[in-house]
Image (cartoon, rainbow, N blue to C red):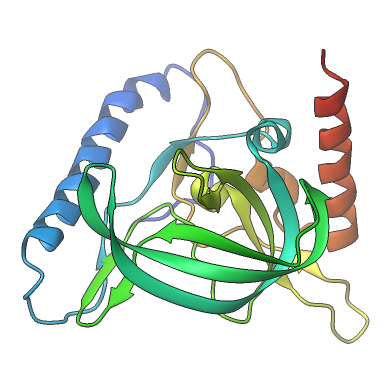
Length: 220
């Protein structure tokens, strides 16, 4: 799977690529449809979609889109087939034990739904989606989907695994490994949240999120 750690350059090189992005998105959906159409196929591991292409969010935009932001540890995970978006697909529910709540109501446990997973001999992998590993500690931005379930805001842009403190080194965030190519929004440039939070120490990142929340709450 092709990955990119850089935001695409400014126009004119970015904007003509929106058509390419749509072609890649259609290819991803087609791959998932083929897989779902043959659930008896022999197990060959999760089938990866092509590299994700998404519009970059700034930290302020991600906070504005989120109902929750938490530092939490993944303590349980289960995958199942559900009807979603007009078709049948595999999703994974991960139970998070919240350690710090930065946005939203303080809750001890949260169940978060992500796209993809493994059920029996069938696996689906959605490029660009957050991959929350069991036992991992992360900073996560969450929002409610249309059906009320909690999902990760901006997919992988809202998930920051934490390298825990050790030998005097502070805990630090790292960007999700599932982030693909990020495009600047049409007609403007943003500082991607991935650039703001990647490799940032946890205390500083928490302060930045709280400052973004304060700016959001101050808007009329």
